[in-house]
Length: 257
Image 1 (tube, rainbow, N blue to C red):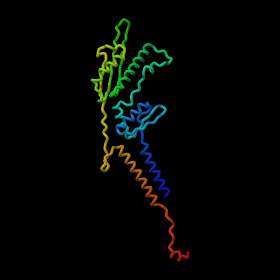
Image 2: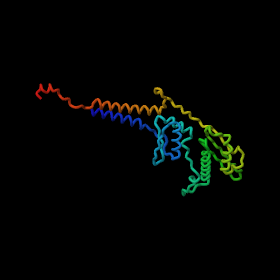
Image 3: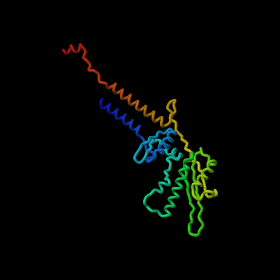
Image 4: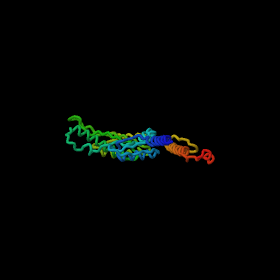
């Protein structure tokens, strides 16, 4: 009896742990804002995500069965955001003397990062990349090569490229030295629509109800645990020890007891 009850309790606990602990880390080392954006985006597609604070940053985990959907959803949304450095971080004092060429390369990189960060704040922009060419004299006596820039924008369908392009052109041209007042050929802007993820959720038919896979999984585990509880209760009732049966009076008289 005790062995049977112990086996039932261990089985129910194992099933419960398997059903509740099947989590997979989706991203780790995230900033607080990126982790919140990821969780908010997944919640819009009915995917539960958990946030765990660690020393190296914040990790976000989801159910293992939702990994593929989560990656596609976040990729179409441009999440997590690309880590960018600003001018202060690139040119922080390190005590090392750099050559003029290294300083120029670092300045161009930091400038492009600053412009990308500003463009990424526009609603509907998924990815923004900026390539900068500053005015440069390649050799003494030769004419100065003019400044130029190219901008790549991946956008959602909520953004209208025709209406936003003049403002992007003005912002970029005034942010990069040597581009102000130049013709459009010196500043190329390319808009590419982001691939929209169509979240096709399979429906599980359960009697008169239609459930998503996540809802069906939750209901399945609830019914399983309920069945285990009923089984334990039935076992307790079936094997409940009763009182010792008393012998009939006639039998006791016959035996002289």
